[in-house]
Image 1 (cartoon, one colour):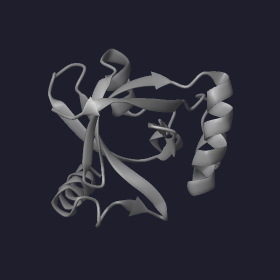
Image 2: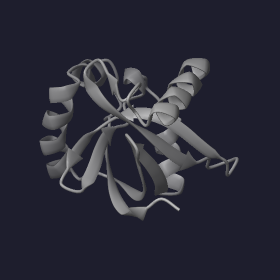
Image 3: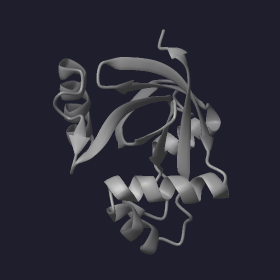
Image 4: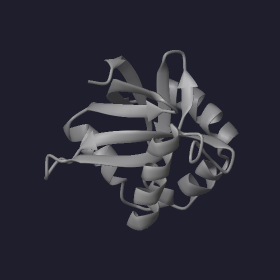
Length: 138
């Protein structure tokens, strides 16, 4: 899987998201977090929806009982960068509150219905993560 992710990231970056910018019809962005143990940048393609000027994504990890590494990294350091097509920006991440989650979950499952299947197969409450832009990436 790591080879697939690295290839996806490389192609996305090289084409400014023209290739790799969608997956099964859902929009994809590149999320770069800081490794909570290593301190190194870690980039992962994730599906998202826009919510005003913010971006929302799901920390599903394919419905596994453990959360994705990128979400663990964001909880340790909520400042990250995202690339949406050719646009790069610095963002601050936070977990959606229950009201926000209800509203955003409908939008997210509208572009990727499988999130409902992921929630059904895990006992973990899958969080919705809101990425609020802070400005252009530096």
